[in-house]
Length: 479
Image 1 (tube, helix red, strand yellow):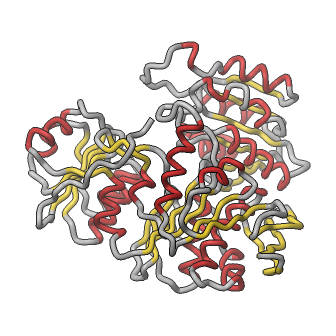
Image 2 (tube, one colour):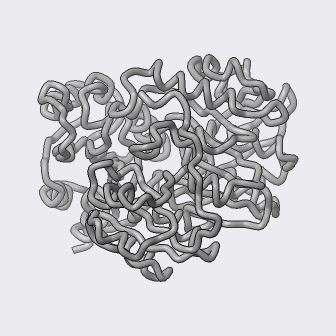
């Protein structure tokens, strides 16, 4: 469970010129480092490992990286330290930071202090769809010439980046309910002072932080209450938990979804290489919207972004034009390449609901092709047994399922608390898909090379790079 409230904001030096970042090679931390450099700060950082592409990306911006969490990393005596949630209080540089009395912030505290003041934060939240919805909203506001800033948990297709510092007063944020740092144990999105927001959906996730879905509901309830009366909140009206946690919101609460009870809804959805739907607002048609990303869940994502855009005074016609040119986020049903007539896709899905949605979307897109689903359990939730019974159905529409060994991590889990990968393979097999448990990435690549056929669709599902699986498969098929 998280803390009841954020800590009091610490006293900072009157002048800050130099900043050290602990855990700098994380996606969000690296983005923050680049944003700080753009604002004129001298930035250095440390991480357990530094390797491309993040290491070279940071170095290209003049940011020095120190490998390891040593006390000596702070010998350059920075004015401020930003601490990522990868850091523990016992790490040598964290101990040294406290010994020296250096002022320090978590990432969300730093983001709020240096970048959100004087802006209007538009915060996209929910268990699933945050990255895509916030990317859609960022593109819509840019297309509408609002010159937005944004920070998003994925590389956007339209911008080729996960952050942007614009001159407008809009700041689009992906609002994560995960906690922030060892000294700041509250959800990240509690720091973002939301003016407008969405709640896309709520499910149990982050089992290393939350004991049950009720604890997650509690932090979303508090988030909804933070939105000022003059702001607005768009809620997935088809999700009972989202409706429940938003009931106490002081701002105007409006609903989006597919059900007829929603104020903003989609109907007559057509699937294919693109997805299109008729969009209705308060009983009046806004016309037909087309997006280049497949799946019903992406229609919902679009509705959430559309709702906030309308509240920002952006016309439905402008949103329709923007969505027709929206490019998907990296690792969201991303076509990595094609070789020997086989298409290889990469997707971030690792929660069973996300796996199901992605597999179903790709099945709609390719109804007659043989589809492979290759899965890695690496996230703190997916390695636990909490979703043991939910995963099999998520893979049911695939033809072939390959499961790798769950990622090894020192997390204190007892054997009975870990995902039983052998049982999962048997349960998926019983539903129809040909299922194989192949522990190592290179062995998976060999199996695919020997058994894939022209026309096959290969879908790699992982919350990480999956050991380079996707490119290795393409290289093997090309050879």
